[in-house]
Image (cartoon, rainbow, N blue to C red; front, side, top):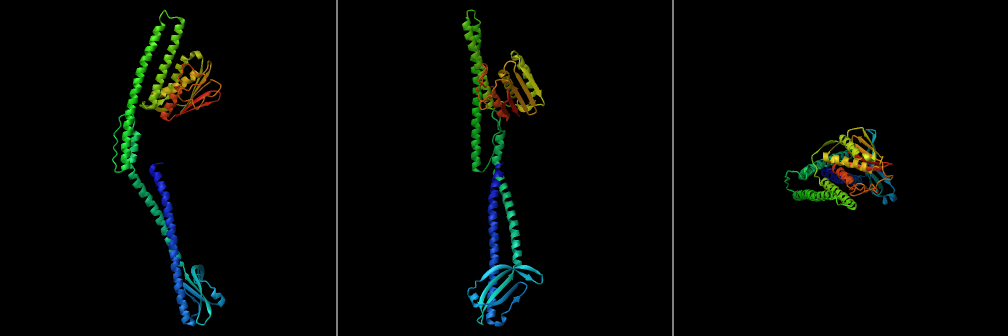
Length: 422
């Protein structure tokens, strides 16, 4: 979810609560005010009737018209003494319309000039009041939704305009690539926080480019400075082994040293390669088809490991493509196939399955699964570790997978299965 939509959604919840509370309070206050006005009218009507009755006894009679009605009824003194005046809602039957309509009623008691007590019932029609309440409620709802929509739209426009420097900065960061020529950050803004963010990003990218340049230079220097003395050591060992005065024991020692030097050379190359991958030094991405690469590698590895008499089965049910650096795609497949070839015993079996978005390489081997939690870490080797293995092959595979969002899984069901899901 975008920041602006997240903010608007939270703001909308608050606005809905506030406006709903306001609408309810406004509605009930208006309703209460209307009832108070109606009750005041009843009170005035009551006082008028009582004054009229007290001045003219002949006025003790019921009255009935379209909007109001009052009734007088004589009551005992005991009831009149304890009588409590009250207001309530009721209905009244209109003979002209032959239906009941709502009325507001006031009942009270008083003593007339003739010293007798009377109950006075005064009714006022609330038809207009109901129409007014309905109209008020309708306009409150219209006002409520209009205000809510307008506030949300205005808020989104204001937020979108206010956050435009932030989104511009995000777009610039998305196109920023270490090791390449990047356009300068041109993001003028009057907002202090965004100015600070722009300055911080500029400083961070400059530091990153400097560190990237230094690291790239270090990798190049390390590759050159280490490979050269190692190559010299290897050549000197080979020359020393060719001397005629070398004994069998010395040749054996030279062979062991030569093997360790070769392992150091391979280890150095693998570590440097892994460092380049993790630092994102491989660009020039393109659509790479893995099928021909796998076919060619299988032929090459079958020749190299011919002495193991491995049975390799290739099943292609689709064309597998991936957008990546071609060299890294080759390395990913090479390491997985080489891992299978190295760890498959003599007369073992290797199965390669290619689907449109998936490659599975399976091989027979030890009768127990590998440690899945450490399998793709650096220098991990199974119990039957090979002397010519550096323990970095699968770590390089995982590093390439992380770089391009590829998922690599391992499973065991009598055979070791490595699945690449693109």
